[in-house]
Length: 143
Ligand SMILES: [Zn+2]
Ligand SMILES: [Zn+2]
Image 1 (tube, rainbow, N blue to C red):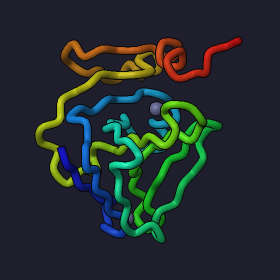
Image 2: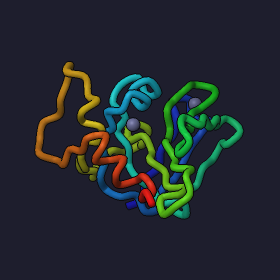
Image 3: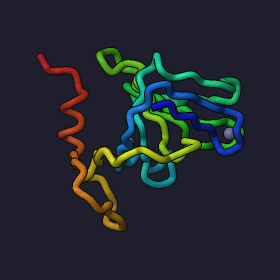
Image 4: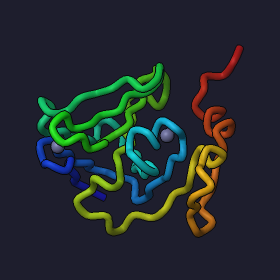
């Protein structure tokens, strides 16, 4: 499905031509600091994404394998993008909260569930992955 979104002030806008109709929650400490809460994200392949207003977009390298894009005018957390080489290189994870229309999107699951504060938890039976389980999926195989 095609989805559009923007930051709070509207300086940065994006279109995802073929957005997956599911959003996942990340409970890692970096997402918590960056988003101010739980980061809900929708995955998007790089060749399906159009970004407008890149003059107002700042990219912060939050780790060796990912960067986070935010609006330098209003501070909205727009996306996490994988910068590490490999099959996931360039893949975006757009903040679900920045979508213009949130309809038609299901809950995909939760990652870093063992990092979640006790304060809240989500209902439902979507798959939950620990930090170790998640990293095993993304980390390059040891040789
Ligand atoms: Zn903005
Ligand atoms: Zn995270």
